[in-house]
Length: 412
Image (cartoon, rainbow, N blue to C red; front, side):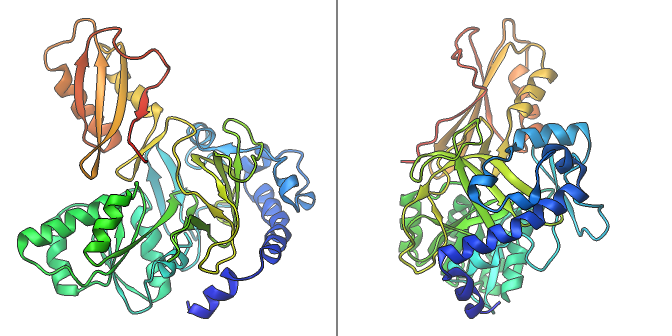
């Protein structure tokens, strides 16, 4: 993709963009209803030709991730929301939940190239991709985006930091993509090993919070770090530019902010649940409730891009929580409790320790068997794919507030 192509779309008038999106929307709705029985049921009685404005779109029901999870369990693997069959689908992924996602068609099926370009990454750059390529689409999202942009990708994945440092010293990548925390791990490891990691001067991060102190530390080390907001289901929804003034909504996405638990849009500036419609004909998602909180920012970006801006990730409208780039769902906590009948109640607390996410799993048990904490720790890691500390607490000591996951990270 060339810079001109990006500029042409990113700088069109908001009115023109809105008109084009809603001129295309009836065709997407018709395609979804005709080809996906799940959408035919979910949108029963909807006339696709009438949905040509935000007001008309707001009248459609929201499909929340928790609903999709239930539908997929009832009708595996896709709950009837795949438009057609798997013929021609290159990959199928399983994200935590589990939630199944088919890869859409095209060179950049998750729309990542635009975000990489806005982060200063250019054709010909070598990109170290430290997102996971295992089970989930995480690594593939920006792998495809980088290659569509004309970059070479080193598919590093997660872990084995010493080998990754050797690759950095040899390949001299210009850019890093991955979680915000892991870049620091690589830089610190390179320093300990006496290896040169100075080739990396740009980074695009996602899957966790980029704290101002961490961004400042990267800047001091010569790396300009930008963020994008992406999900396995939807791809890259929004991204930062050089202005670093909110996140700019990606082209081909319709973003709404609604009052949590409803489908009613809130006023610009008000925090609510992020609901997204994406023009994906393989796996259409229409008014898809992400469960994430955000807000629409007023005005346009100082960088000159004209699309709507959002405040980025402001928390969860439900208890489903992203930890180290992986979602942990209350359903998974229920699974852990089912495997350990001794546990009466439990609560997963997420904190920050240093520059990394950490989680503690507190469990109440009347008469805990010997080795219960160790057994629960192993189950926690098996179910969530994350390591956490398990603590046995006295019965009745956990708050009676209905929470099984408590995100207590400070994002101030």
